[in-house]
Structure formats: structure tokens, C-alpha cells
Length: 559
Image 1 (spheres, one colour):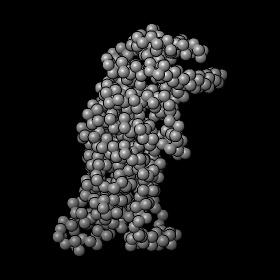
Image 2: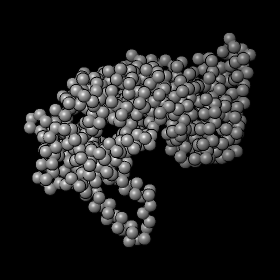
Image 3: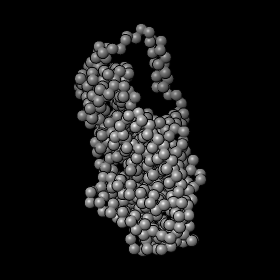
Image 4: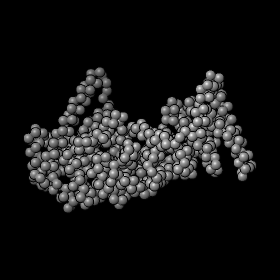
């Protein structure tokens, strides 16, 4: 099955999220939400003198455009060498007159001017190698680690330049130039320096808050271009800073939203960062931040976006078994059980519970969930899929998948009296839960049969064209079948064979009675379960896979 801790792709039209595969489809929407939040903040402040200056400068540039010299390799070299000279001169004067800013003020302004000019290099990623060869990356990073805080305007300029150089679209224009630049930045410990710089900034000052926002953009750009750097980035103080900023007692703003997004990116498919977050008590931070929404819904689209990012981060963390226990101790189950009652957070809370209870590592959470009366919350959601799900962008299928997965996990993990309580749920009210289960069985069986028909047709076409059906094609088809509803169907059949083997005869009778009544067949259920048994145990030991397969096949044989 796909990585179910992944960030959900959020589609543009607000339609249903497609599957749980790892995707950064949230970027555009996240970007829009953040930009809007920033725009609202900026709108409050009048056009400052700086902004007027920049506007005038842009106007002047427009007028000067025709005479501007063409930018090519030699002019870029010249520009970088000028930057190096001015950077060296500024450093020299600072050392010579440490207590006399007038003496180096002019050199600082000159240096700032050339940094502004260097923005043009961001339009030519194939010349990025010059920045590295001529030592400019090293010097720029040097300016970030400047002791003097009066040089904030310079570090701001460096951050702006780096943000533009690492713009993700630019990086993809010249993979070669991008690789060289990112290598040099990482070698110079860029993340550690950026984090130290953010520590110094005071977000009460608008320019400095913008500085933090732009810094996070650099980190996002680099992480998107090279996901492998997430572990290193998290360890260089970024994880700690993000957690501190997310729990800071400050009004919600674009920066907090951005932090939640970067956090979700760091944790995606990465056990190292998940472990780090767990060790830093990050699970508690996530739960505290989410607990705000147990009383009231997010008040804006941006706040809802942040809530979803925090839920995504939590789901990712729960992929690591050690974090399941932290979640249990932090009373995560109680919080999710409460949040199942809120429309806005229901689907996300289900997803978290699913991640916390799945597999043998979820056994403690399963028992605790029954103890806190979670069955009273989960079964109404199983009996009736909520109608109004458009607002949260969740699909009916997603809801039913998570609910069935939670029930399947409990059947797999529960022992003694908690298990009896779960099975009793299926017998009450004249086995109405079994009737619902069978209704879902036929609904998903039909969806899968239709998908199978389409796929068979395509295979037939391919063979006719003389194409080869290799393993990767077969995997592709299997994933498409899972997505069409096979995954939910497997969960439903698993619940069917589990309750039929529970020793409660009325459950077994009811399952078979409805199968016969609606022209279903035991053979089909067995076939689905066999296929399921073959595919289980992703990333688990061979002994586990073998034992689990045998357990499932025994259930099937007795069905």
C-alpha cells in the first residue's frame, strides 16, 4: 500500500484528494493561502518609504532598459568579482574600525548595491557554477553569519538573493547548475546559518517577519529539489526552531502556516526526522496545537490549511513505531476521539487514528481506544458516511477506507474483554453493523469489477499491439485497482472473515445469508483475501509476513 503518512495531494478545484500517495500537490494551494495571509498583513501597513524607493528604482530601470549592457558570462564574472572585492573591503573596514560605523557605512551600501545587481544571475542558472568557482557562495554565507545585528539589511539582501537563486522553477531549468549551487550551499552549512539568522530576527517588526518567511522559502525550494537534505536540515537546528515557532504564543499568521508546511515536508517518508521530532517532544507540540480546534473550527482558509498540515505531520510521525507510544501517553487518542465529532477535523482525525492503530505496533492504541469508549464514536461513522464532506475536500471513499481500516486493526489487535466489546457491537440491533458491512462489500466489489473490466480491455489492446506486459506494468495496474476501491474491499473482506471466525454463530450466519441473498460468493471473497495476503507486510520481516499470511489464510479456509 502507498505510504499512508504522506501529505495528501490537494487538488485545485477543491475536489476529492486523490489517494494517499506522496505528493506535494498542496504547494499551490499552500502558496496561495500563505500569500493571502501575508497580503492581509501587508495591506494594513502603508507603502513605506522603502517601498516607494523600490518602485522608483523599478521605474528607472524600465527607462534605462535599452542601454543596459547584455548580461553574459563575462559580465556575470565581472559582477561576482566586484561583489568579492566589496565584500572584502567591508570586512577589512569593520575589523579596522569596529566601534565606528560611519567608517564602513559607505562600503556596506556599495556591497548592498552589488548584491541587488546579482539578482540577474537568478535568470541564468546555467552560470551558477561561477558563483561557486569564484567563491561567491562562501562569501554570501559569510554575510549571513555576521555578528553585527546592525547589518540586518545586508543579511536581508542575502536571503532575498538566495531565495531567488533557489526558486524551484529556476533550479529545474538547469539541473547541472542547480546541483552545483545546492552542493556548495549545503557544504557551507546553509541551513544552520539560516536558522541562526532567524533566531536573531524579531517578528514583531514587519521586515524581519518577512525575512523569516523568505528564509523558509529557501529551505522549501532546496528540500523540494533535493528531498534527501531533509534529515541534515532537521538536525541543523531547523526542527527545533520550527517546533518552537509553532508553539510560540503569537497570533496566527502566514509564518506559522509556512512553518507547519515545512514541518510536514521534513517528515515525509523520513524515519530520521520522525525520530528526531519524537525525541524533541514534538508529538506533544502537535497535539497541543491541534487541541485548539477541538472547541472551535479554523476561522479562515489559511488556518484550516495549517490544521491539515499539522494532522499530516502527525500521521507521518506515527509511521514510526516509537512515536505510537508517545502519542498514547500524550492522550492523542482522547483528542482524536473528540475531534471525530467536529465536521472540519473529522477526516483528518480518522486518518491519524488509522495510522496510530494499524499493524502489530498499534495494539496498545487499539486497547486504549476501546477503553476510552471510542467504539461509540467510530461505529456511527461506519453506519453512515457523513453527507457534507465537500467543505473539507474529503471523499466518501477516503472516509470509508479509514473507518474500515480502524475496525480491521482492532479485530487484528484486540484481546480478551476489549475484543468481546468490539464483537458485541456487530450483534446489537439485530446485526445492523453486519448489514452495513455487506452493503459496503457489494458497493466496492462493483467498483473493482468495473475497474478490472477496463484494465482487461487495456491489456487486450496492448497485447494486440505487440507490447510487452512487464512487472512494472502489472504493478501499475495493481495500484490502479487499489485506488479504484480494491484496498477498501480487502479491508471489508478481512472484517467479514474475522467476524465469521469469532465463534459467534449469528455473525457468521448473517454474513453468509446476505452473500447468498445478493448472489455474492464465498469463492470471490477467498480470492480477494488470497491476493491481499500475498501483498501484505511492506517493509516488515519475513517471519512477520509469513506468520501474518498464515493467519489470514487460516481465517479464509474456515470462512
